[in-house]
Length: 450
Image 1 (cartoon, rainbow, N blue to C red):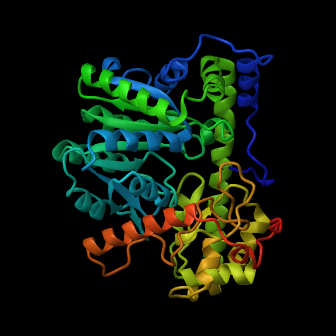
Image 2 (image 1 turned 90 degrees about the vertical axis):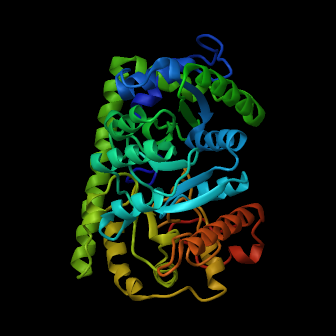
């Protein structure tokens, strides 16, 4: 995540908390257990919920290597306990999670998250009605990546009722709390969902909300039906963590715990997060206004009304290619852009460049699609460069249409498309790019490849 100077976001409150936690470099506090720093799990739970909505004896938690590490640990647990279960992923987005689930040998199916008008409540619930007991539904708490469109109280209530009826287990991704919404406000819908179901998983990232992108600090909360099942699940999570990374990360967890435990630091951190949300909201409104002035006949209110770091521009692969080759502006599959770092000049440049690109339709020419799949990354440590540099942090899939379902496809065809895309994504990440695929135009401000 970047500031308007296109530099990594710096939170003064977290810098002070980090200094207090680390001090002169010697270890402070008790040695961590196999679940990491226990203080952070308790402090964050109480901050998010007021300590009143989850039964303590049914809830366990472990520190993870970032929010993505929390999702990986949850899917590892699913593979070990219910390998026949299906992971339901919202579309558009979640390409990396689809690739991870396929890598772990899990079944995946998409469900519609949004359409041009906003949240696709009816189609979403209709598709999720096919879930079976033990299936996992991945749902983002706030700041949906890539649309920025979030569920409202009615959708959260309907999702809770559906999970009770089908026996599906919600896996809630709380990775964008802070930039998209205040952490406590972001948990209102997920809290109601978790209170309504016997089992649930909550993956938390401290990267965006706490400014701990380099420390890769996260948490996985697990709510079981009984205290005995919670204890058994915790032992399983600890074993999986030990096999994967040894001990959970400590430095970032201790810094975040210091911040939450200090009223002074917590007050300053909340103020910094409010300023960040206001800045992103201003950027969204300015971009939507600029696009509305240039492009008539398109409703840009979903862009203006979204929350968080990400937004989607309605670009076909051919339009993405034209935007890149003609203007040096790169976006990820589906037109995903990161709004952090956009200033007035970049908004004006994007609004001017976009109209002819929106008119370009169809797939990108064969051969040039490979160039789109090999766009160079920017220096954003979170892996999320802004629009106008290296686009979106999530490298495009090595196929023209990403993983978005095509119109007219049956559910079986869409499922097969997702599986192919995830497998191709994993193969592309495991195969080093050859030198000749790295040539070609570079985005503005990018260093030339060595």
